[in-house]
Every structure is written in C-alpha cells, then in structure tokens.
Image (cartoon, rainbow, N blue to C red; front, side, top):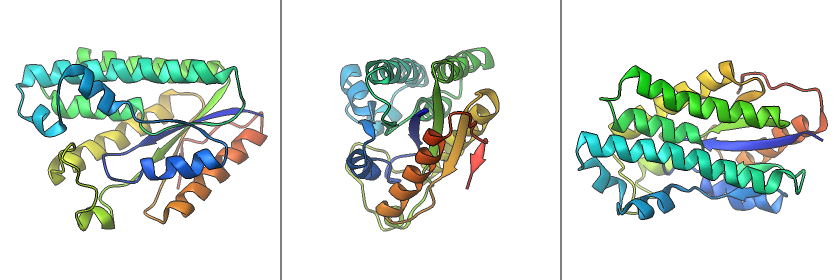
Length: 221
C-alpha cells in the first residue's frame, strides 16, 4: 500500500478540526494544529494581539511560524512513517503558514518570500521521495456557520477581509504545490456535514493507497 499524508488547508472555523476525530476512528493518525503551541511559545495571546503589532514584529513572528510548522510536520511524519502504513492526517499545513506570512508581512521582498516557499516545496518533495502521496484538503471560506457567527473563541481574528485574503493565498499556494510537487493533489472540501467530508477523504485516500503506481492529478473537485 502507498503511504498517504492528508494536509488540511483553510482559514479558521472552516471545519478542519471537526473531521479529525472521525478520521482517527477510521484508522488515520492525526496531527493536531500546532498554531496555538507556537503562539504560546512566542508569548502572543491571540491573533488579534498579533494584528496590533508592528510590521517588523508580524513578519518575524510569521517567518518563525513557517519554520515551526515545517519542523513540527517533519517530526510528526518521521515518528510515524516507519511504524505504520496508516494514513497521516494533519489538521493544518505549512501552506497555511505560508499564506499567513504573505498576509502579515506585505513588506517582505520576493527573495525572502521565495525562500519560505522553497522550504515548504522542498519538504513536500522529500515526503514524496520517501514514498508518500500528498493530499491537500481545501476547506472553503465562508461557510453557513461562519455567517451565523459560530466558532468565535477570542483567539482568532474573524475579520472577513483578512480571512478572505488568506484563504485566497492558501488556494494559490496549493495550486503552486500541485505544479511543483510530483505526487500532490488538491481535494476541494465543499461545505457538507462532517460525515460526508470524512467519507470523501477516506475514499480518496483508500483509492490512492491501493494503487502503488498512482500519481495524484493536481486538482480534484
């Protein structure tokens, strides 16, 4: 069987964490989002607090977050890849961290931005070289429950302009990776009940796992 890693991508409150438990019940090994651990280590209480910081501080913070995500993801996958053929499930992806860096650090130059893009792309290609197929599950924004005001917890900034921009950047980076990573595909997770989203991911992963020669097509609807 082929080893599959599923990365969830999307802004806050779009339903990524909601599928984690049900997928674990189906045999997936979950990796919770490392975002809040990074905020705590950096001494920042919330995204709202980050938004009040200077441009230089926000850039430094988000550059550190990309590096933190890359290392945390690497450690998780290295821990599990030799122990089991079970698919791995990451609640957030380094693509999210790239998107937030681009949003929070508009003063970053192209050389700096491309450095972090390469960091993520190189990591993904290394995962492929190690025998993994990569699936990016794109969770759309906004959703009906976001429009109803659900999921606000005081930690996230819920500014619609910010979330819309970051979501567009996440999609941009997912498309970029589909072009630059040899076994990487995007699955669009339309708004649906949790059990339907879980079934879609399980079906995609099962199809890939059973075909040793399969290569992911860049985008799946």
